[in-house]
Image (cartoon, rainbow, N blue to C red; front, side, top):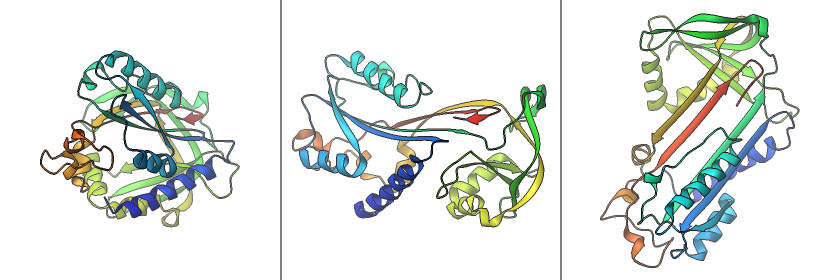
Length: 280
């Protein structure tokens, strides 16, 4: 995952992007980090200074041992507030056990309005949508004839369109990138290539690989919610020792017996809404 200085530099770049976006009145982009610690196991001050100074994260003390239900309610309420109530019930009662000592929560919230909005009368209320599984379902299908940045990627065998959001910031332009696999190319194969070759994603997102073309764009209204474990992802990225009974070392966080206990569970939850005038 990189050395600590490298991670700090990367996060500094992320913070800069968020600070620039914060000056844009047309979009809302929010980053929030918070630590919830067992009240009798407060992390060392040096660690708190690091996460507060470098990652803008504050800390709240909870009683996971004697009142885990209240802790779950508190954390879920904070996440809901940070995400405009889009992500609810991040944690269940089973996620917080008596031996839980630290929960780290990260929230990113975005809401933007399309620069070119779909019209209500240009929506097919009962259109066929062909799913990756082969099933055909009925959806509300928006469509519009407009000029967009368009490109094709021969490595992935996909078509690409960038849909810009309204913006009053000349330094940053937010877009939604739509990727459409060509006929007889499975979505799963595209996802696997993007996962194994990150440079392909950079090619897709780079508008230098596109040109302005008039498109007849079809886009379904949808709400997508996903929840997945991060443990395997982090292990593949190189964060292995933290999950090992023999190699876990959290001496930077604590100066007592918890320092050698491995991480057990990590979970991520996302929700996306695509509508005629905006996405959230």
